[in-house]
Amino acid sequence: MRPSSRSNSASFAFRLALDDAKGKGIDIDKPRGVLEADPDFQPFFLAAKERVSNMQIKYIELEDPIEQTIFEVYAAESLGTPYNSFENH
Image (tube, rainbow, N blue to C red; front, side):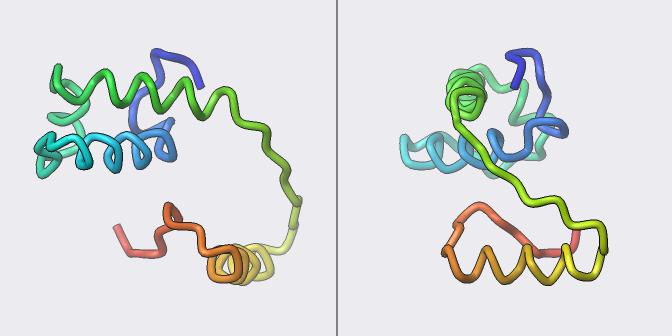
């Protein structure tokens, strides 16, 4: 995660920042671009990008797109990951 990354390329950090900002009473009910430019929200997004950049990750490479989709849903449900979203955009 680069500090210059925007919400479309740092979506996990953006979700973390939303959660943190909401917990501090920041109004997050704004379009993504407006929120990203909001000086009250920016420190949360920068801190979240830093947090993500310091995370250690592991991954599993799955070639088959159907297997990948099923595994992602299974892993999210099994691990109770709060930041996975399967909503349509």
